[in-house]
Length: 297
Image 1 (cartoon, rainbow, N blue to C red):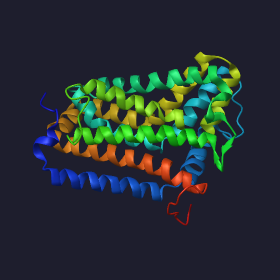
Image 2: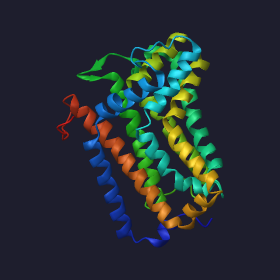
Image 3: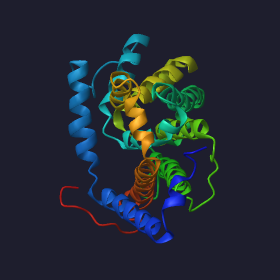
Image 4: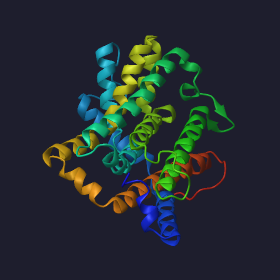
C-alpha cells in the first residue's frame, strides 16, 4: 500500500505539469530525430548478419529450427527499439510487484508479452495474407501495412501515456493497489508491438510462418521475436537482482517518489513518441500532413 500514488502526495500540480510537459517534449523530439534507416538497416541488419553468420535479408528460414533461430536473432537485432524503453519504464512498477527481487515481476512482464505474441502468431498464421501487415496494397499513397502500424502504435502510445499520467495521479489509476496487473499489462503492450511492426526481418519471418500453415509454429516464432527484443535488458535486470541479492530492488523501492517520476516520464515520453512518429511523421512521408525532416532522413 505504501507505494500507491506516491507522487500525488509529494508533487504539486505545477511540478507535475512541468514533468508532463518535459516528457511530452522529449517524445516529440525523439520522433523528429529518430532514424529508422540507421536503427533498422545499419544496427539491426549488421547485428543479425553477425549473429547468423550470413546476410539476414537472403538467409533461408525453411524448416522449424531455422525459423526459430531466425526469430530470436531478428528479435535481438531489433533491440534498439521502443520495446526496451517500455521495459525500462516498467522497472519502477516491477519493484512494487516483486518484493526483494525483480525476477518474479520480470516473469509477470514476460507473461503479458508472451501471451499477446503467441496469440497474434497463431492468429496471424490462420488469417494469413489477408492481414494488412502482409499486404502490398496502398490507400492513396500510403501502404496498407503502415496504416495498420499507425493504428496499432497510436493505440499503444495512448495506453502508455495514460499509464504514465495515472502514475502521477493526473487521471484515474486503473491499477491502483494492483501492481502485478500493471506489470502484466505493460508486458502485453510490448507484445502488441508485433501487431504493428513493419520491420523487414519480422515481415520475412511472418510470411514464412504463414507459409508453414502451422499456428503453433507461428506462436513460437513470435514469442521468440518478442523475447529477443528485450533479452539484453532482461539479462541486465536479472543479473542486477541476483548479484545484489535484492539490494537493487530495495534501492529502487527506497525512494518511491523518484521511481514513480522516472517511470512516469519514460512512459509519457514513449507514448508521445509513438503517437507523433506513427500518426504524424509517417503519414507525412506520403504527403499526408507535414512534419519536420532531419537532413539524414
